[in-house]
Image (cartoon, rainbow, N blue to C red; front, side):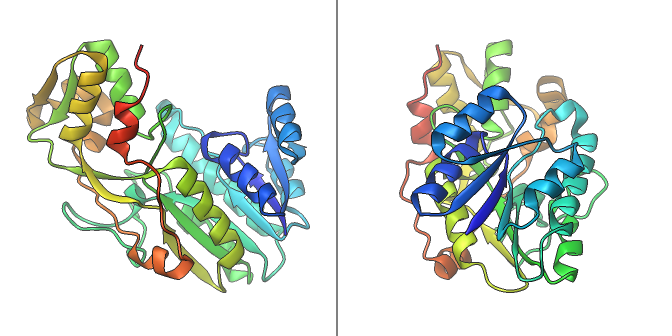
Length: 295
């Protein structure tokens, strides 16, 4: 199949491009820089210049493709609302040029899924629809689905290796800056996680096996890792104290990140595993954090 990948030289995209090419697919990757273009050439992919804000570059990249995989997102949280709007426009642009029956793979998150504290989020749960959360990738894909384009939603947890670990990277940065590794209250709230290589493999299975209509998949290996365990592992690695922060004072330490630091959002991938035959085998989040080079 001919596959257009945005975010092709990013954390997940780099692994996915490699896996797709090894499986015999033809890959076109969206890049902004000369370094990114060279990386794609070495991997054996076609280079397509553009970015998420250049909607015509997205449309021209997606036109004529069998599959489009959208992995790109600007993670500058100081512009979270604008980045969410840019993502919405990008998804709509990508879907607008795909022919009916072709596949649009949209990246979402288990943290963007409805569910109160303690609720284990599943593929059947709808996305959050709140003004407080500006990212709405799943809703943005509806226009493509209404045109007869197949849509696959991939919800990501904390995707990790020994270099990066999703939102955990922000906890690491705060611990370095403040000299303590903190968690809120008893730290029993949980975040789901999955290893990078297994997540890339899941995307390939989605590309090859997604059915008609709109289907949701969850890339979860570990249903939930307690924030206290994460914070204590970071503390050992950086040789700083692990400290509990009173919920009422969480804003003082975490700032805008206080909500994420306290949220309990376990998630399941039981249906996804059965539907795709996906069995993640990589290391757990704590193992990768333990083996990370902190200095």
